[in-house]
Every structure is written in structure tokens, then in C-alpha cells.
Length: 323
Image 1 (cartoon, one colour):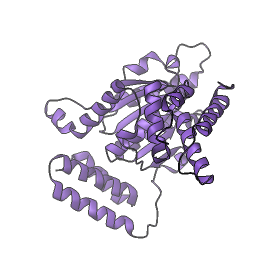
Image 2 (tube, helix red, strand yellow; image 1 turned 90 degrees about the horizontal axis):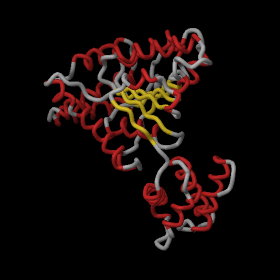
Image 3 (cartoon, rainbow, N blue to C red; image 1 turned 180 degrees about the vertical axis):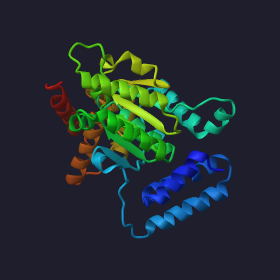
Image 4 (cartoon, one colour; image 1 turned 180 degrees about the horizontal axis):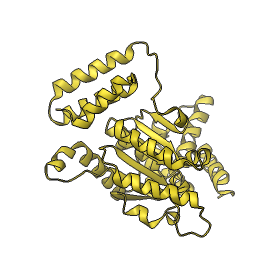
């Protein structure tokens, strides 16, 4: 049987005539029933939602408060866990988050909660946003991305009030919630150059996340963990640190992305060395550029020379010098 929160969310979305929220709530109920072993009921709910979505829609926009329009982006990602290339220890911890979410009913029977408040830290392009997409995909949830830098700059002076609206939405609407560019508010409160407004915003966030009792995943992504306030870390169930890919990860990433465009004689070891100090996203772009170059040149394989040249371009563009 669906949980009380799921049923309330379904009713709220119906009363507010928010079709997309209604479909999301229904699919969450279907996922819950599937975890209980009620496959027939789960499939029937999914079929009804699929049929309804095929009908012409009058409003395909997720109904966030109008004043937050453009600051919260919603997507339905399709990123499998297999596509995430990170070290084995980090991947095991991500798998544990998925397992606990899927079997949260077992934990609740023993008075325990599943991991659902995550802090992801690491350099840009190392897989933080992709992890949120993978979690949303694996858990069959929409991904809501809160752009913290825009929230702060646009609503300076009333950011705390907007945060309250966001957490009210988290309580009402199922999904994975990613607070992107979290550095915008998560800085150490004792720093001398901090302004009073930012301290108030951070204090408000700490209070909201500590008091949140929804079942949704809440993820904060920060590029520089050294600047984060120490009080943040104990508010999260898990803190995951991301690093630039090592040589084995680079080889795996390149092989996955190049796919059938990889020549059987492609010197992957050499290419992986050429990609040293590049992030996951930079290697991703280089691989996609190599595929596009091969297609435009009417070639079925990417050449080593062109790929190495593209890796050098990435070094020059992102690090300011050729390697």
C-alpha cells in the first residue's frame, strides 16, 4: 500500500491541477508497489500514466512557485549506474544509497532511515551532477536542480524565504533535489569577508535540512569543500568526495564514450596518458568531438592523431596551456 506522504502528494497535485506532479506521484506509488512485490498493480499504474502522457497536454511545466521560475530546472534523466565512471569505493557508496532507498521499508520497520541527504564535493566536471542524474534514473524519480548561485544573486535579502518555499516543495513533490553550486551559500560562517545576509541564509539552510522529514533525496554539490562551513558536514547522511579520474578510469571512460568509433588498434594507454589532469566532463567532450570529426570526414573510426589533438585542445582551453 502506498505511504501516507505519497497519497497526500497525489491528492495535492490533483487539487492543484498539476498533471506532471500527479504523474510523478503516481509513478512513485508504482515503484513503491513494485518494491513490495505487487508487480501487476505497479505495471497497471505505469500503463495508465503512459497512456495519459500520450494525450495532448495543456501544461507541461512543473508548477513551482512563479517567483522561482528559471531557478529550479526539472528533468527526467536517463543515466544508468553503469555509465558512471568513478573509483570503486565511491561507486559502492552510491550503490548503498540506491539500495537503502529501494528498501527503505525494511529499515523503517527497525526505526532506521535511509541515506537521503548527500554532500558531493570535488572539482567541476568530476561527476557530481552526473551522480545526481544516475540516482534519479535508478530510483525512477525526476531530478529538480536548484541553481543556488542564481537564487542568491536574484533574491538577495529574501533568499531565506525562497529556501523555505523550496523545502516546502521538497516535502510536497517526490524527486531527487540537487542544490547546485552550493558554494554560493555554504561558505565558512566565521570567515571575515562573509556578509550578514549569507550567514543568515546558511543558518536557514542548516535548519531546513535538519528539520526535513520527507523521503526524497537531497543533494548539495560543492566545488571547493575547503570553503564549506564545518557545521554542514554533520547535517548530511553521507559526504562523497570526487577527484579527477586516474589512468584506469580515463581508459574506461574513453572506451565507453568512443564505443564503436574506437579503432581496435587504438593506443588507449597512450590516449589515457594524454588525458592526464583532465576531468570527466573534459574527456567526455573530447571523445564526442572525435566522433563528430570522424562522422564529418566520412570515417567509421576516430583516429589517434585527431583524438590526441582534441585532448590537447581541452588542456589549452581549461588549463591555459598545452600539455
